[in-house]
Amino acid sequence: MNGNQALKLTGIDALAFAGPAGFLDMTDLARARGVDPSKYLNGLGQRRMAIATPCEDTVTMAADAGARALEGFDIDPADIGTLIVGTETGVDHSKPVAVYVHELLGLDQHCRTFETKHACYGAMAGLTASMDWIASGRSRGRKALVIASDIARYGLNTPGEPTQGAGAVAMVVADQPRLLSIDPVRIGDYTRQVMDFWRPLYSKYAFADGHYSIQCYLDALVSARIDAVGERDDVLESLSACLYHVPFVKMAFKAHKRQLEMEFGGELSRDHTESWQLLSQSFERLVAPWLSLNADIGNIYTGSLFLTLIDLLRQSADSLAGREISLFSYGSGCGATYCIGNIVDGADRWRGALDPVAQLDARRRLSIEEYEALLADTELADRLERLEPSSYGLEGGLYYTGTRDHCRQYTRI
Ligand code: HMG
Image (cartoon, rainbow, N blue to C red; front, side, top):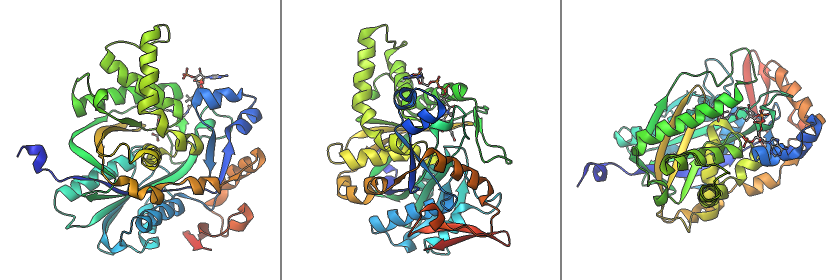
């Protein structure tokens, strides 16, 4: 038996998405900003973006996604021994989102619970930490619940405005996973201090050096991949899908182009028809089919990569059973991980539990006026004593309903 075989098979055992009840259509936004809609639809690749009301925050989305993952995959909350919430939209400087979620999900008191922050990388950090926790034997047969939950806000009339979004992805990490096993050896990391995107303590809105952030992302991809699989030029041919962090859909195309260039040994350009065709075919086969949820939801920061995994599993878990895929997580600032996973045989049985399309179909299209009013209300929401979910058209669900005596209140209505 070699070293690899002796390692425990761990990975993602359950997955679920939850997001806000409203969305903005990208054509409406483009018209309001006097921009050619084709820039947002084709240049960035986005159709819609999820918009949270002040009553839908990181905690409510995380708890909703967590409940869907546990119920949909028949997991007893008592079996969860670690809860990690990856977020860059915390609701308190000190108190972790995870501890609210721990109570809301009714988890055991002997559960290790914490929040991870590293921009969009927080959930991947939680996933790998959970794999290590299981592999070390400290889990004692229990599972980890890792939830990515975020609201992307760049502010009105900024270049980042069309790349907003909101939502949470919950994943249960376990040995003998039912959806995706992750190779504990072909996994590579990368860290570098850069100011490409950040959100100072005094701001609800992110600051981004947008074009520089794209460069930082691509540099991280190259380095993390080399750390995972070395300088090999035959990785892509053995893969059935390449999943990327998706701040906007077109970024996945740029990333895939860079990955292919690493193997091709030179720049791929529209001017060279043959090489461009190679790129288009590879992108259409390995990347494009799993970007539709991201195009309809927008950037959900920590959860974006895992949304592409949900999209893949809901469509192709059957045909890709037993096949290898790559996953690339990037968080500004910056940190990244590239790894190889394997779709578990039988994963297609769980399609119904992880497919969020019914949720998305039930969303309400917001007008530009409603969207702008929501952003203004959000500025004040942390300090208001009473918030009324019904005033935002919200009906049944768990909502943030105001802060009393400096304590956030969560109410299920
Ligand atoms: P911009 O400068 O307004 O857009 O901002 P642009 O001029 O670069 O145009 C975008 C694309 O649309 C270009 O395509 C144009 O050619 C095309 P490309 O050359 O890139 O292929 N275009 C058109 N296409 C069709 N019809 C038209 C048309 N006009 C132009 N009429 C930018 C774009 C992404 C920079 C901005 O939205 C931004 O700053 N976003 C936020 C930062 C971001 O998303 N960075 C991504 C990498 S960093 C990351 O992923 C981490 C992050 O998720 C945060 C975290 O980790 O927490 C952001």
